Image (cartoon, rainbow, N blue to C red; front, side, top):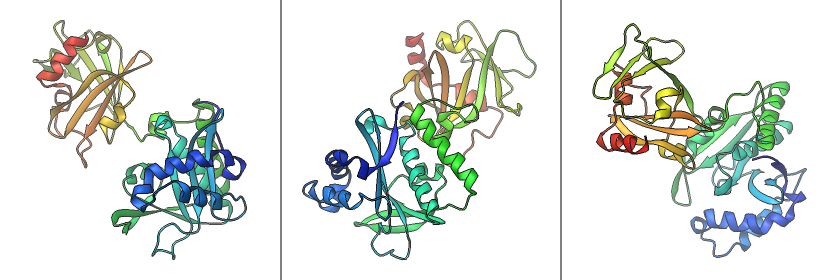
Length: 324
């Protein structure tokens, strides 16, 4: 999304009613709140620039997108830990665009500018997302009778390095364009990990492995230091035509179902072997393979890796045929 700005809440009090409604819907039942009124009161205490608590809002063209805050304390019983990143929320329509990461970077930058070296937060279920932003789990605790994890982040980077990193995140979410020195958004913002590139070809290669029931010959996956896999398709192979003729890049993801949300699915998810789920999406005319491995696995450990990833079950084969 282009045109995104991150501003102090005090500069945009008109967003408070919408923010209060969002936060009430997100956490009100857990906190026993009956109406958004308490949220409005709390947000008004965050209308500061020079003292904590401070809240920020992400917005574009008059549309509120999300919020985050820097607070002295945020978890009862842990007053010895300070300060805290809290109230991080992005509306569901605008997620997966780097807005949450940019809001967190803004809070971290403010904390660092105040000489703060360690920042804290607690989360019910977003540990993996925060870990990708450099946060570390400090330990478990209980909030509103629910198990949560306290996380921390050390802000002891040099000023030039920190300004460059935070500025890069803000520019990325503001312009919606990737700068020449930046990694792709799916790796930098979503935590996808490069796995391999699959290149279709028509001539036999040395050390090909024939996956007879699929009608493909594959080579290079186990030996290429760059993750290059060569694929030669036989005429009867049932995959979409674009996969047969266009190279595809593959990423390992933590949650395949989440990664597929809002994307054009080319080959529906299947589990070709224990602990491995695979799907293909189409992005701007290019096929992209997504793989989810069971926790702790980097991939199938034997020389049948390509076959295990490629071999769909009967349902997936029918889906491939239908999409040809």
